Length: 576
Image 1 (tube, rainbow, N blue to C red):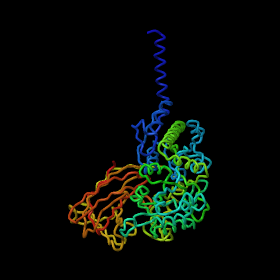
Image 2: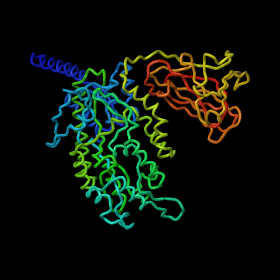
Image 3: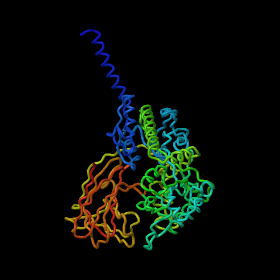
Image 4: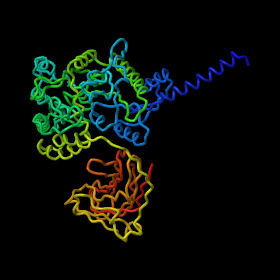
């Protein structure tokens, strides 16, 4: 072989080796919910990854999960010592994600001067108002990730019902008269029984985001200091005013929050006005010949004019990642791809006036209230539902939910600390050699009527017997909890839990037996439910418990609905 040819071969080999080393340094893991790694044409995240790989040679591995698993995916990867490099985040994940230590700053790793078609796309407003803590930025966002809230209304319907142009929402806004009172006045006129059935079948206002009323009144559910620590704000008179307005709206009958009704409410004329986001009209106008109009949110009594209420999202660098430079490079591609895709979609599908409508709101002093619910997200809809669905007073709702809200805030204000993955071995438990339940299970806290014994004539031989009085302790409740050290699970794993069950005594309507992992009032995992219809059948109850984002050992709570007693046997807890 000639020297030149040999030199060429050696050079090629060295280049290949250096490329492999280079690529390995740039291999990253990326998590965004609902990504499709096989869709290189339509999935924006995958397109961004392809461009990233073409430049760096690095491999992009997509972590799969749905919209409710962002926190669990981050935590489980940290616990396994295999951190995610790029993490999708929402404004409502902050300040919790920063305080808990799920992310590290993106400062210096993302180019804030990036452009698409000559337009600067970095979302500076969100960076300052949402993602900045202790002088550092914990996520990067693009401009079109800003999603504005507005009122969409059926103008044709208003015209048909004799509402003058000057009395309609847009005109009222232009005159500075678009308030809660004005919306309520219109809603009362438009709420009707159109079929003559004796029941309302068209509501003045439809909405699924109950939280938005607090924001219209210039208030948030928590207060946040510069370090990201939060305190509860339920007692603020502005919060009470928002809840009282909701109570009045529901009691008077012009407000509807059933999503099955409001989903296409404007199109079906089941609602006259609906509170939605700026991208909703694009699909509405395609489905109706009615004229659809839009207006900003009305002002509550405690503000002169509602600021533009926006949501946003972005990308952060996972805690523990050593590939910050690579993560920052991928984030730049993701932001550019999403921005270009959004602009293309807006120009082709949005009503022309809506594009400018959104731009105007973004350019003003945008208001991002999402971080105010980061810690309370799991309970906030239930808290607001006390007023909207249960019909309880604002005062009683606040009193009932304040203890849990304070506990959630205390947890959110505490860094996550060291994550420990304890060993676990499969558990199989029958009750043949057991004379007493002591040491295995105990009565659930607060269930005073519970009796727990080992029954000799059980399902097949001995079985655990659980009884309680539904009239004293509720028709649906957890009754026992297992000892975590003997009949429990440990954190950071996924489990299959199964057991046999037979009803003792009468079986009520929609009766069931259920189980879940229960650490404390704030931390429960999984939901295993089995419907039962008679007391002669032996039912097999089986299900999965996953996303156990907690250190230590955790017991299994067992409960029942519309029955007063069960026999339990053949408990098996195995790792999936």
